[in-house]
Each structure stands twice: as C-alpha cells, then as structure tokens.
Length: 265
Image (cartoon, rainbow, N blue to C red; front, side, top):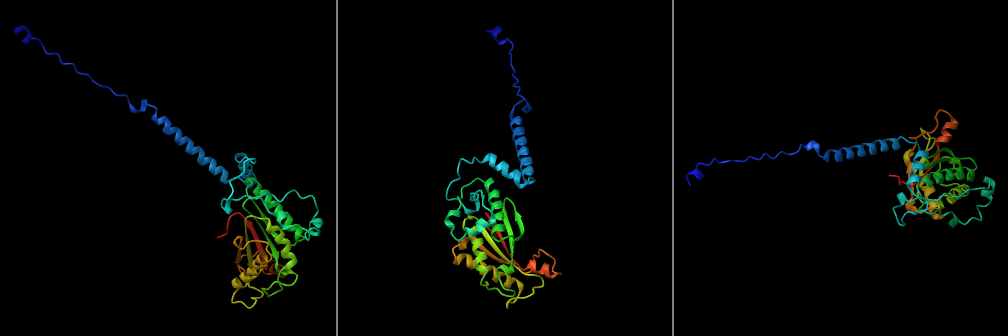
C-alpha cells in the first residue's frame, strides 16, 4: 500500500490544433461569386453601348422564335408581327386602300422582340409611301418610329379644325395605326413665335387642340382605340428648322406621330 501511494502521478495534456481558415475552400466560393458578378456587370455595360442591330441579334439568340410569349401580358411588352413583305409598289398600295379590310392588318402581339425593329422599319416605309413622301423628320429604332406631317395636309393656316380634304390623309395613316398594337403619340407643334394662335391663349393650347382634333378623328373612324392614343401640345418649343425663313417656319408647323410599345408619360 505504501508503494502504491508513492507512485508518480502522470498527467497527459492534449493540444487540439485547428486548421487555419485560409486552408479551407469557402474563399473559393466567394471569389467565384465575385467574378460572376463582375462578368455580368461588364456584359451589361457592353449591351448598353451596343447599337439596335446588335441588341436585336442578341435578343433573337435568347428568344426562340418558335416559342410564343404568354397571352394576356402587359401591352408595354407585347410584340407585333411585321406587316409582311410588300412586293407591290407604292402606287399599287394606294390603289388598293379602298378595298382593304382593316382586320387583315391586325398584328399578332406575341412575336419575339427582334421583330419589333423590323416592324418599325416597315411602318416607316409604308407611311412614306401612303403619304407620297410628304412626311419628314423620320426616326426609326428598336424603341419607336417617329415622323412628322406638315400642317397643310390636315389643317388650314391658323385653324385647329380639320380641313375638308384632311380625311383622306388621316385615313391612310389610320390603315397603318389599325394594325399596330403599341401606343401612338400625336404631338402638335407651331413655329416660334407662332404665326397664329387660332384664337387660343398661347401656342401650347393651340398645338394641343390640333393634336386632339387628329386623335378624335382616329377614334371616331375606328382607326385606333382611345386608350392607345396620347395627344400632346409642345407649341414652338421643339423646332426642327430655323424660324428665320418662311420655309423653316412652315416645317415647324406640324403634327408629329410617335409609335412605340412604351406608353408615353
């Protein structure tokens, strides 16, 4: 018993060594996420700087034309079918307007986004043919098509009422608008200072009254729905030609049409 009491006591000490955090793989996951985000950022920057043709080609790649979009989506995102390949001349189109069924021009709103640019280009070409080259200020891109019509095709000088022969010109545009599923902005413009105010207090009211008169014609003749039309009056604020010449002032007195799938605010 005495020998057992004198036996040395042995204490074992265990040191638990842990691995350094950097030796694991968590940082690799974080780094991969960072590189992915960085790549996406530069891709977005590149797309923002691309032209309309490039963006349309990219959209065509990611949108299978054989797979339609869902019906009933917001009109702002509806895509229109192109008006179709036109083999007839401008004269043939003009002669055939009287017998044309407007329902034949109604578009399919579920086309891929790359067709939107082609639709706008074809609308611009057809507008120029229908009005026999009287339109000007033509601007066509992926987002909209814009053109102007001189006042003398629609209004008498100094008047906000449609003149008698305005109907035939507006009906030609109506054939175009009937098949368009986007929004149509009708904007009145005057020269600066205005040659006439048509009895209104200022150029803004005068130009707006003209835009409203055109809008009402399209509604009354069932060329376009009211909820797709937007009348605006800009007065002489946005001149397209110097007001120092008679010809320049005449060009500034105009009605401007903008067709877009994005609703104007």
